[in-house]
Length: 110
Image (cartoon, rainbow, N blue to C red; front, side):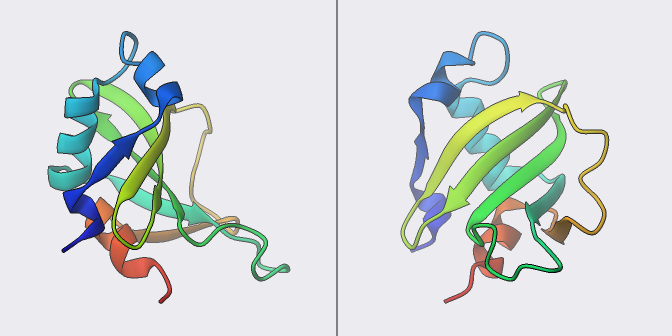
């Protein structure tokens, strides 16, 4: 069983469904769509950022979005969705882990 089989949507994320994606659309994106998946890192401070928290950036259902989610052992939690507010998620403070939420699942340390 993959964490992608069960996706929880937080209240914060649900409240933004009028501006962005519905819970059903978010689940579709995480299970079937691709974009740029990364997590925050600190080159000088190992363990500073949560290794299970990721950002999926892309254009989904005609919207440019960042979807922030965590990968738990048996499910995924979508923490929030927002317009792409940072100019770039590339560079020394972001580590690209792949292009899909499945890549994020694989990138979580055991």
